[in-house]
Amino acid sequence: MLGDALRLIICLVVTLGVGFAGSLFTAPAVDTWYAALRKPAFTPPGWLFAPVWTALYVMMAAAAFLVWRVGAGSRWTVAALTAFAVQLGLNFLWSVIFFGWKQPGWAMVDIIALWIMIAVTMALFARLSALACWLLAPYIIWVTFASVLNFEIWRLNP
Image (cartoon, rainbow, N blue to C red; front, side, top):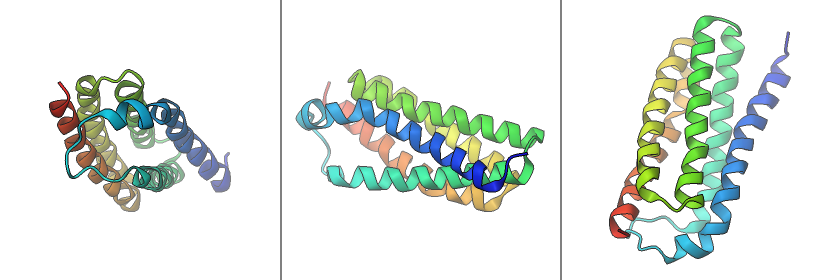
């Protein structure tokens, strides 16, 4: 049986690890390809992204930990953590598609799927822990904003 401290560490390592892996595709393109794109006036300054994403990944990890702790092994926990893993994969894939492959149109498809999976994850998390669900609220809000930004970048750079 895993203790709470080990579960929390696993959640943090996996979630922050996905964020780090995504940054390997993002970082090389930020000062080159991304800097040359036309962007809407509401684009946040570049320095804002790293702290926002770090905070979001920590909240995501905390949410996953709470769900895992509440019902380790139950079918609802398995379903909730599976949905969490799928959305985490789509999150990583967005960085690969947008920054690595430089395909804002295909990244738009991914981010729509990501948004849907975050909503599904939140609904499943809510069955096990209201706090876990609410910890994902800033994430879905940010991804909603990121979706609009992605769309506008795609539109402005045919």
